[in-house]
Image 1: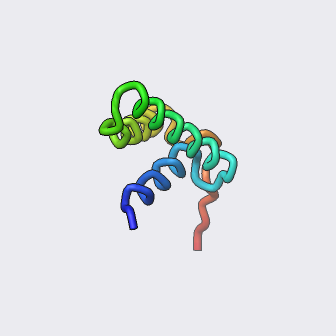
Image 2: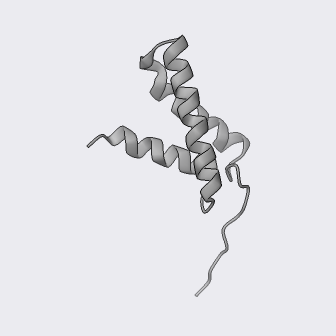
Image 3: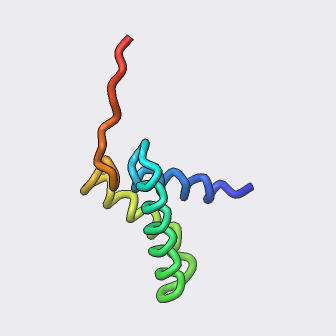
Length: 76
């Protein structure tokens, strides 16, 4: 199918935070809203760039996503 859908899903998961269902929904809404606003005002060729800029900003500013929860470490 389309590899971009997979990348958008991974970006939304990272933005929302791993292990948080509501964070995933919020990340997907933020990503989709930002992409469509940019497509409307600037041009559709910038949709991918906006997704990756948002990803980089979240990785720098809030690397744990919206949820801010750390995953448990399991040792064997």
